[in-house]
Each structure stands twice: as structure tokens, then as C-alpha cells.
Amino acid sequence: MKEVVIAGVGQTPVGEHYDISLRELAYKAVEAARADAGGLHPQALYVGNMLAATLSRQGHLGTLIADFCGMTGIEASAIEGAGASGGLALRMGYLAVASGAVDTAIVVGVEKLTDQTVSNVNAAIATTTDADYEAEQGLTLTALAALLMRRYMHEFDVPQGAFGGFPITAHANGATNPNAMYQRAINPDAYLKAGMVSDPLNMFDIAPNADGAAVILLTRPEILPSKFSHPLVQITGSSVATDTLALHDRPQPLSLHAARVSIESACQQAGVSVGDIDLFELYDAYSIYPPLILEAAGLAEAGQGWQWAQNGQISLQGELPVATFGGLKARGNPGGATGVYQIVEAALQLRSQAGKNQVLDAKTALVQSLGGAASTAVTHVLQTNN
Amino acid sequence: MDIPRHWRLRKQRYALVGEVCDNCDAKLFPPRDICPDCGEEAKTLYSFSGHGEVYSYTTVYDPPVGFEESAPYTVAIVKLDEGPLVTAQLTDLEEKEVEIGMPVEMVTRKLRSATDERGMLVYGYKFRPILNASLV
Image (cartoon, rainbow over all chains, first blue to last red; front, side):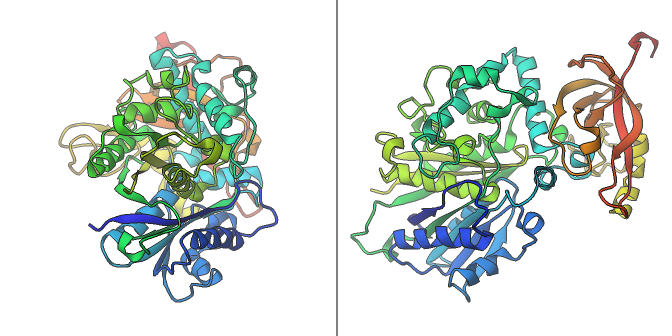
């Protein structure tokens, strides 16, 4: 495999973009990433998107975005894996460059979730669960997270307030991210008093569905001029793993098998252990997932992952910063774009360009996207390229 | 719509028909044709008793399209007596407080309403509390 580096990153603010279409969102982020990469011309385009065919009545996104962004003619395709779509698109770009099939690939994560009513969006997102045996029973992705959280609290005798540290940290970090949907910190009292959405999940336990686009340009270092305009970040580990699609088909629903396997594999490729990680961009669409992911990563025993959020260990100055630009919770969760946002943010950290959100001496980042109820897991390890 | 899709699932929806593995005797619901325990083919039909207990539960206040009429509704993962977990709504709760471990039994109820005038009502399994578990 050849060395793969990030030549450029771009992103739009995450939010409710009623005045910007799907293709225009993609273009804004593409333009930013190409400028960041010194005008590099990609030979292949991979789009991560979850629901454009349902919510925007638009399929065929690879060609649409290549065409609209002035790249008509190049190889282009879209890839879908629920909330992990962006991570999967990056995986495709990584494989294309690492294999030598292309010199330069562009990865576009784009999603538009605010054009439709909440019930339509909920039904569309529920298509990422088991349509015959979960969605048709009236389950939503939110309800599945709530079922996991209730069971976790029952099995490990954990109080509801134990999860608050994750959204509180995410909001604290989002407050200084100009691209975040929510740029306000929340306090522990507000968390405890928040209204229930799907008990035991309250409104602060759930990331907002949003619009957004983020872009990564990948290449090999020898393609770039020797004095490049910014430090290079290398992708040193890349792994995808799957679990059962339906939560009920797992022998131990609280054990996130795919998350664990993909972290182990990505870290092994990079030659790092999870203890070497300087920051972790993880899936915090619902507050139950960060503790389960930390347990899957081997950073906590089963039932202990929530303790990471109790005393600042996951803050920007802590032992293992997570959600450093606000995570899905405060930056917002634009579905299939989310996985690419996570990579953009981790790259900015490793380039020391994270501004007020900078993690000091960040050299190794772990980035994980999950799809459905952790049914697909995509994990990348990013490292400074010295 | 989706008439053939719902028709194909009639045995599962109305009678909790799953499969049993001829090799290791694992009971499977929903049916999946390959036994997840031993990896052998498992295509022999098996009717579940419909009895189980609540493994976890929550309430849906923000329903997807088609489920607005019943919202808020309680959904659960039920651990069937024969082993598998199944996801379903709980019904006939009245004032009863749901808790993990509560014994429940399968009943047939309307799952969703028609989303337009040409749409169809979908019926299928839900689970209700067993009022006097000792009589079962």
C-alpha cells in the first residue's frame, strides 16, 4: 500500500440551510478543499450520503456532484452505509489512492435533512434500521438508542445523570467552532432538567439532524510540491467492520462488536495502541454510544465507559479529548456528511489549525463513524506526517 | 402500499413463525436461514409460543410517518422464552408501569395506518403484559 495524505479539507457550517441546495452545499465544501489543496485536480470522486434519494428525490450523486463542481468526466460514485456513509466514502478514496489506481481522490460527504417534516425525516432515517422487523414496528434510530441506554442503566446500575458529561463536553467544544450548529455551552443542571424525548434519552442526549457538506482531498506525498502550504496528515489505518443490522439479532446488544473490530484493525495497521491516541472523534449521536464505544475500544471495562465523562478526562485538556469541535451533538449531525466532518476536524487538530479548539501536541487521532445502531463501523487513524 | 412485501411476512407478523436449526437446535426469530450460532443452514419453520419478558423499553413521542395515530407508544425488545430477542410495541398497558423482566405475551394488533387513500393498514405482533403470570 502506498502512503496516503490529506492534501486539502473543506467544510460548510452545519445547520438548517433552507437557502442552499444539496448540490450547492457540496460545491461550497469542494471549492474550499480544492483551494486548501492548492488547486489539485482529483481523478476520482467518492460521495458519502445517506438519504438524498428519499428526502431530496435525488439519486446518482456521484455524477451530479462531479458535474456541478466542474469535474465532469472523472470517475465518480456514491456510497451509502447509513450514518457511516461519510466514513465509507473516505475508505473508498483511501483505497483508490493507496492502491495506486489514482493519484488523487476527492471525498465529499453531503446531506440535507431539513427540507422535510420531522415525521418524514424520522421515517427516512428508520430505513437504516431493519425495515421489516424494526422500522415496521414503529421503531426509530432514537428509540433503538433509548433501548440500549435503558438496558445499560439496568445492567450496570448507572443513573441517568451519568451520561451528561458527554453532551456537556460536546457543547463546550462546539461553543468555539464557527461551523457548529450549536455554539452554546450547557450546564449540568440544564442537562438534568431537560425534557425526555425517548426515555431515558432527553433532548440533550440527542444530536440534531442537520444539513452540511465536508470534503477531503487525498493524494500521495510525492505528488505535492515539497514546500506545501500546510502540514500533511497521513492516514495510517483504515478499517470497516459490520455487525448484525438489527439490534435484536445480537447475542450481547451492549457490546459493540463492529466498533471494537474496526478500532483494533485500524490501530494495528497504524502500529499504535488506543493508549497512544491524542484525540478521538467518535459517534455521539446519542449519549449512550460514547461509553459503549470507549468500552469497545478497550479503554474501559463493560459498564464503566460513562466514568470517562465524570471529571474532565474527555475535555480538550484531558487525557483523551473527544468531540473536539462539538461532535455530532453540538457541531450537528448531517447524516452521511458527518464522517467526513470528523476527518476534517481531526486533520485540523493534527495540522495545529484548530484555533481555540486545539488539542496540544496532537499527533495521532482516532476517528470512528457508526451507521444504524452501530451496525456499520468505519475507523481511521490519522497521524502527523513528519 | 408494499402489498407483496407485507404479504410475504404474514407468517411472522401473525404467528411469530421463525426457524429452528436442524444442526444445533437454536431457535431463530426473525427467520434468517443461516444459523448465527453454528453457521449451518436453518430453514425448518418453527412457531414460537409468543411468551417472553421485557429486555428493554422506551416511549416514542416523535413517530415516523404512519405511526402518528398511536403516538406516544411504548416499544420494547422482548426476550422470547425460546431465546431470541424481538423488537415490538407493547400494548394494553393501561396504567401498568413497564419494567425490565415483566412477563409479556404476543397479540395481533394494527401496526400502522394507511399513509394515503390507497395505502394499507398493516397488522402484526405486539406484546401485552400477562395479567396473572402464575396462571400461564
